[in-house]
Image (cartoon, rainbow, N blue to C red; front, side, top):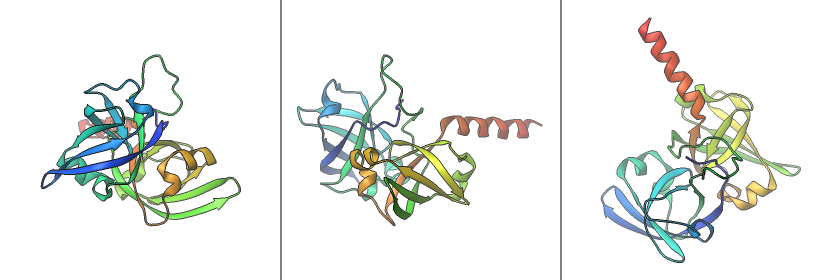
Length: 201
């Protein structure tokens, strides 16, 4: 479980092809290595992955075919920056919202516009995800906990403060770039319960 508050930007040091559709990644980082152990979960661009090995400067993760197919990881290369967050601890502050690290789909940035001290992003999402979005609701984009400031059909709007722009990879992204989307967990549970109720009746 994560909060969507990014701890640092890491850099992909190596991508090793394990099989046709699976890879192993080595990621350079600093903060998330402070208390890392093999088996720990780390969110990489909003994707929950397991640490399989680590050193003083980097850690390794395995990426399965399904994860490659369903997320933006397939578009990354050696040297790409990524958002990193360790799983939340029971004695820490909860600054974002409940984020599972299970990506629901990928979206495309269709507009990026600076407005005073904020930067607005319009993100086009898969049509089937639109039901989970409400004004002022929560969404995780590339693992970053954000608030929905506008919805129009299958497009939602985000407003990023300068800190988020500088401390996450979203600041480097622009029009036509791909992002990972994780919808609000509560909305998904409610949708599932209502669907089951309709089926039972």
